[in-house]
Length: 146
Image 1 (cartoon, rainbow, N blue to C red):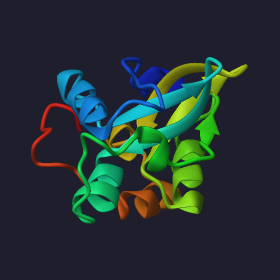
Image 2: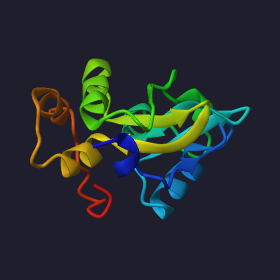
Image 3: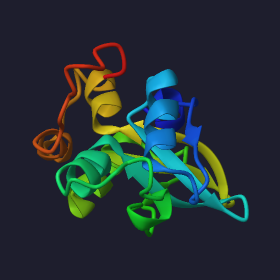
Image 4: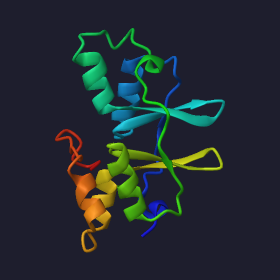
């Protein structure tokens, strides 16, 4: 099965000058666990629910004043839409991440999460996929996303 078949095509795109509050609201409205930052229309960084919790909330910072550029994760780990899900799982495992940005020719096409992989490989679970599932955290407050 290919990444393109299961990736999320709805992607939150947020400017790096936006506040964490703005990003959080956009992520909630679109029911997405992350947002992508573009620089000159090229995917540059990612902000996740975990970034917000660990880098802002846990440090008692004001999400209205913290800018996305100050907490995004870069460089992005990307995958081609024609890659298979086992390759995606292996890449996640190697980098200890839960999401990959799907990119072709510097164009953002979507995002694939460990949960997306898990749901689509129920009958075909190789060791690489099992390993990446150890890093999976399914938020209780997004039951329809994961």
